[in-house]
Image 1 (tube, helix red, strand yellow):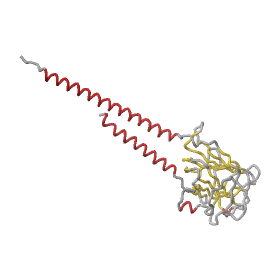
Image 2 (cartoon, helix red, strand yellow; image 1 turned 90 degrees about the vertical axis):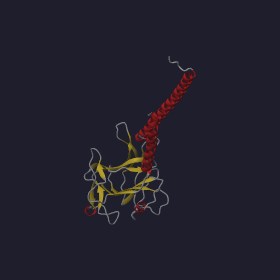
Image 3 (spheres, helix red, strand yellow; image 1 turned 180 degrees about the vertical axis):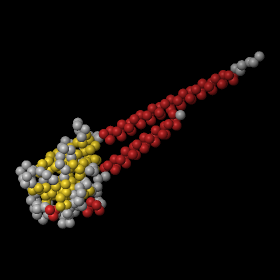
Image 4 (cartoon, one colour; image 1 turned 135 degrees about the vertical axis):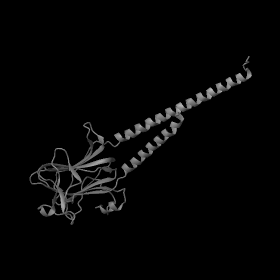
Length: 286
């Protein structure tokens, strides 16, 4: 019976290894995505805990902003003064070459801020919440449309993006879109949303450029969260542990099978000797 179990164990181990390899391949593939806020109903963001939520407004009703893209009708903004926060409904896979871009327009008074954060959903902190990987912050008006452009410079397989604005009296905010761009992916989708199609190298500084003719000042320095690239996430530990358990079970099953095989051969030799002795000294029946 044990000899029949061994191939099944092999199949399970091979299946787990193949599944994990396919899963890692899928997670590591990073494409290009544009989160467009030019929509009548905001569907790509939901609000963070205990804060106001972002809304979309029409350009035709604004006295401060004109569209960044001529055909755009709506833009992302705050409803009231105070803290407003939203995070992406979907998660995204980032690698070292993935670039985060955002078209934004800020009319800021002293005390107003805008932050962009990236959280790793696969790694939880001591409060059982996603770990903060990166945060960028600005307190400066853009004097027209600015283009935030930053590289994460690390791998995050399940990243959620968060935007937070603290808007006070006299301040206004407009965000038209957010782009996740990867230089390593050459697809039509990436080409369509690439604002820097003539650029050969990604930026190395934390300054942002503008894609409009109007000069723009810009997004501040980057505040890096602690690096956790080398830390294994829980999913990887699960697969490693599962594979190790099945490998141990396979070794044990093989050992038992070999032991039973040796015992069987030994019993066969004893049985053969006994038959030989009976053949040499047959019993006499009276």
